Amino acid sequence: MLTPGEIAAQLNRFVFSLLLIGHQKTEVSWSQPLRAIRHHSFWLIVKGRGTFTINGTLYPAEPGKLFFFSPGMIVERNTDPEQPIEYYFVRFHYKETYEEKEQWISRSASDCPFPLEGMYSMQNTPQLIYLMEQLFALWQRRGHMNAMRRKILLLEFFLTLLQDFRAQKIAGDTTAAIELTQEYMVQHYQEPLTLEQLAQLAGLSVSHYSRLFKKYIGYSPIDFLTHLRMDRAKELLVLSDYRLKSIANSVGYVDEFYFSRIFKKVVGLSPREYAKKHRVEPAH
Image (cartoon, rainbow, N blue to C red; front, top):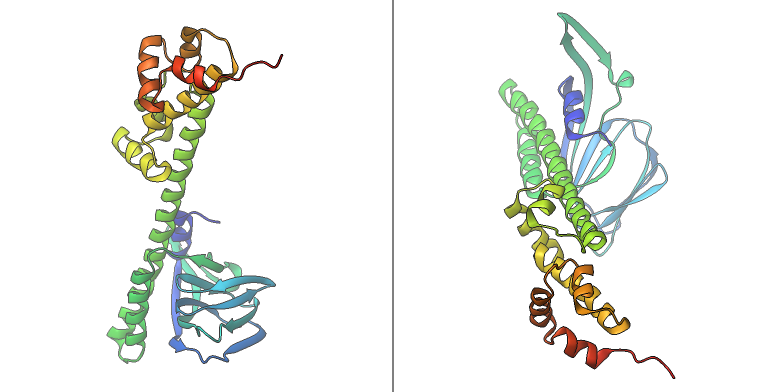
């Protein structure tokens, strides 16, 4: 998929002509059999449930789903009879027209495919619905100024759509960054890790990183690291005869007495008490 910036670069070169704007509440028996799409259009689902099949791939049609259709697509659309879908749609033509190095360049839609097609899951659906409501209301009014408002609103709809894509990407990147540091701690818990190091690895400020880590994982970063270390220490206490200092060193603590205090605070028993209670005796 193109980045939001790349999509914006293409849309900035397009001139649009609006052919039809509509708002439909389907009947319980509504369906559209397989057909070849003739016009560029997009549909925003606002209520109900259904299924759309595009070029043989089945997609859920439900609130928050936005579909872009291009000429030549083979599409079938059906509603759930118990939850008929309600949707807004816009049908449009476009042409690429822009100035570059003091030369005007113009290409038809057939020579520059539309950068959006298929299904997209939106997060900021209420804002998109609001813009569609405004577009539909303006469609029912005549006049050159209303026509200009419709063009402005269409571009605002695309801008809101791209901002939604960007917000989703940032959220996805942030989640991946949190998971990266979580995995890093699993692999490097025996090293003297600091909160600053982990935040830097995630590419976030310390406060933002700590807040997001707690939100996604359920522990603060340092609590997660401490529990990792204590879990490993418990294994060593039960399954090995290592000295307490060696066990402390192996899970990232230079001071065995500090390790013992942390262990008791987390586990509820001192390391020696835990080992005595849980140690696996060798079979004779």
